[in-house]
Length: 193
Image 1 (cartoon, rainbow, N blue to C red):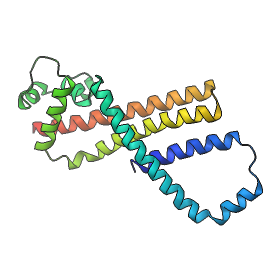
Image 2 (image 1 turned 90 degrees about the horizontal axis):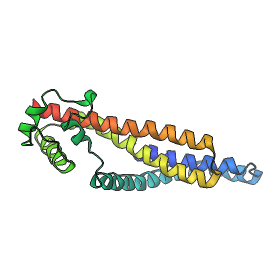
Image 3 (image 1 turned 90 degrees about the vertical axis):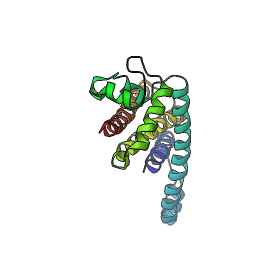
Image 4 (image 1 turned 135 degrees about the vertical axis):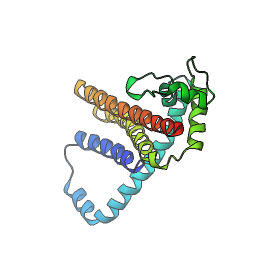
């Protein structure tokens, strides 16, 4: 699902943009589509999988590059108690158990090592749903950005398009970060038990 849904999103966005700019479809096109509709459905699903898979690869790479350039990892935000909603009460105990400095700010590298250590020591299967939700939201976010660029090229620039792109992107980005933070917090809490 984390591959298919973003793939469909990208294909549908670009397809809608194409059909919005081409007002008239001739009758021959309808007849051809009706004759090959079963094959067309399989091709659309296959195309959505391929586009979604490529999107997954690109998203993972972009996320890694963002972390290398200093974007705070969710584990860093949780370990530093950056957000009250996602803070851990026994943060000092967690840092001691992970052998991290108790009072200084944790950087991305130490946070990644701490999360890897916590993952190895806990049973994370029950929290995988949060991970899959964050990956789906990430893939949708970047798929939305890619399809928005393509839509802007096909349809042209407008304020309504720009505002809708911005609002949807903000919602998807927030969901991605929120689910990442929930996943990481649950792993750390489980590690403390």
